Amino acid sequence: MAAYLKLGKILSAHGLTGELLLEHTLGKATSLKKVEVLFIEDYKKALLPYFITTSRKKTADAVFINLEGINTRERAQQLVSRTVWIPEELYHQLASKNAPANLLGYQIIENGKEIGIISEVIEQPQQLVCKVFIQEQEVLIPLHEDTLLSIDHPGKKIIVQLPEGLLDIYLS
Image 1: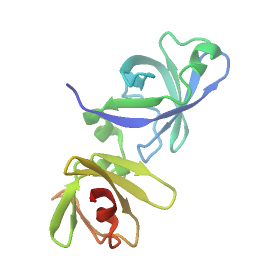
Image 2 (image 1 turned 90 degrees about the vertical axis):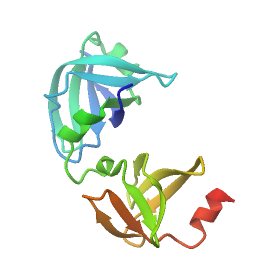
Image 3 (image 1 turned 90 degrees about the horizontal axis):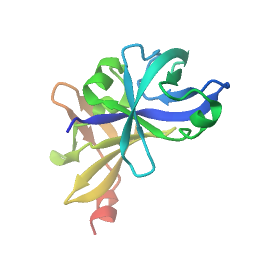
Image 4 (image 1 turned 30 degrees about the horizontal axis):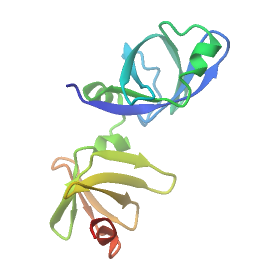
């Protein structure tokens, strides 16, 4: 099965012809011209393919798109608030080098001990939160100026100093 990364979320329907406003996490302005198909999550968490007919930049983190078969505002409104995914390889081609999603697969290390591999990056206004699994338990690791010590991009490692007791909360 192909791996997919979360591209963003559909914010709203725009106009009367089914155009959608998509907020993305690529870290730079784009019109998504290289993207032919998006995968939109339905209510059962299945990824359904939608082909892009037109797209145009709006801001550094948003783009207007038209999808094949979506040609009315009412039909477009049904897709609002849905999560949008693209193949992992394509995401890395389009994303800024500094996009938070590029940290996926990095190992988090504290005091020389491997904590876990980042499986998801959640962007928040003051920090990034990385999801890792320790002993099959989901753990959320905050990354901000107080916890992040260094990033080794070639080695795919993030060195952190976590608040005392943070891991105990999840693992006890």
